[in-house]
Amino acid sequence: MPTYPYETVDVFTDRRFGGNQLAVFTDARGMSDAEMQALAAEMNYSETTFVLPPSDPANTARVRIFHRTAEMPFAGHPNVGTACVLAAHGRDRDGLLLFEEMAGLVEVKVTRDAAGLVTGATIAAPQPLSLGLTLPVDAIAACVGLAPEDIVVSRHQPQQASVGVKFVLVEIKSEALARAAPDINAYRRLAQANPVLEGRLSLFLYAWDANNARARMFAPLAGTWEDPATGSASATLAALTLSLGSEEAVAFEITQGVEMGRPSLLHVAARRGDGEIRATVGGGCVPVLRGEATL
Image (cartoon, rainbow, N blue to C red; front, side, top):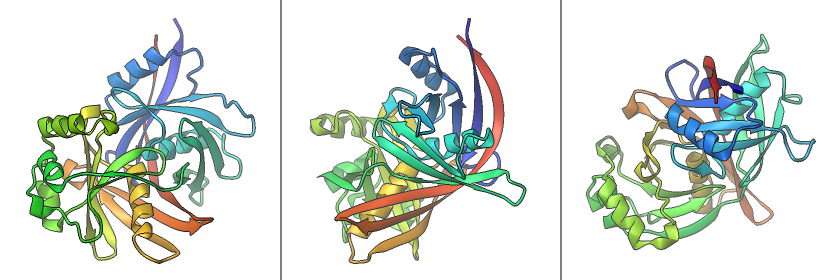
């Protein structure tokens, strides 16, 4: 029976047992789609990644990302964590890695300390900002156990947006963030009423704290009741924020995971260029466990 090594890391943190957990299978050759999905469900993290040889030798790897119930076209913390694991094995080229993913090519730059140890990474989202449908305030409020007046609409309505994977971004009042709690029946009603969502309804709630933001993300229909750090949604928020103003670029920090006891810090930025808005997200990463799976 084949054996597959894996490593786990905590992402968007500088210490163990904070941030977002990730399992990385560093050589998934020979593993079937069904086995990848089963292992992701067994790990029970927000996502698990599987590293395969690239189709283009100029790139570092093909990376497949699975959450508990399905494959993802792109995600934030899986790219940061996978890059840190592979770079620790010497697979970067002068700090750069290129990952082939369903949503496109993802460029990752790793950071090292004075001793040469990998400490984190910053990824460039594979797609420019795109906007989808807006959703009704009352239905969104019901999904997260809040009142409609807790939702802030002065800048934007609850807005589906993407830089590689779709989220619904919802600004809420600062004092409401800690009170939010997902209602899966309300999620199901809203998803059924909007077939264009294709059953995917991930709500990224955020509140401004001076020039930075605090956030929570709920995706119970996908098996993630709450996510401690959502890099792809955070990058999308940076891109959306830039789109709402006239600046050429924005950069700020997002704190997430506090209510879960897994505090996370994400550094996001967005920039205009060639008629598009592109975003990046980065943060720390620390190793936690190593093991192997026999299939």
